[in-house]
Structures are given as structure tokens and as C-alpha cells.
Image 1 (cartoon, rainbow, N blue to C red):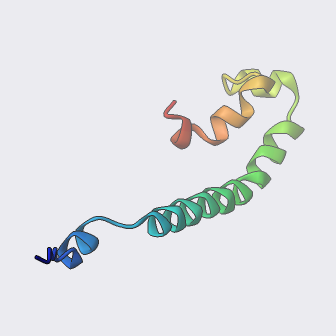
Image 2 (image 1 turned 30 degrees about the vertical axis):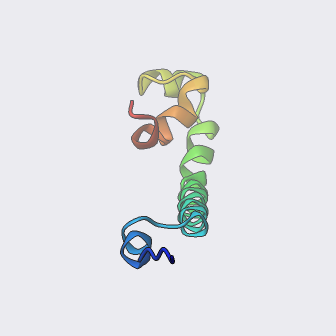
Length: 74
């Protein structure tokens, strides 16, 4: 007696391990590229004095969080 299962439909509906790893890798690379695009803004804010940052409502420790506020959800 033979047993046969057609798994082609399952393979199409569920991405495989390599596909999920690849998707995660691409997403990580996109986040890295976005981070590099924001470095001029970080440098600009770091060049400001503490009083200038305070006028913006920022502390020096908040610069990264401020620049990446869309990522951190703040």
C-alpha cells in the first residue's frame, strides 16, 4: 500500500525557511540603509550646543531616539 500526499499547495501558502531567512536579511539591510541615510541629521544635531538642543526640547542623550522616532514609536 502506498501513501501519497500532494504538498505543492502547502509549499505555496507557507514560505520556506530559506525564504523567511532571505526576507529577514533583506529587511535588515533596508533598516541599515535607512540608518545610514539619517547619519547627517544625527551629526547636525550633535554639532548643536546643549542650549540649542534644549530649545528644541532635546537632550544630547535623546538625539538618536529623536532621529529614529518613527522606528522607536516615540
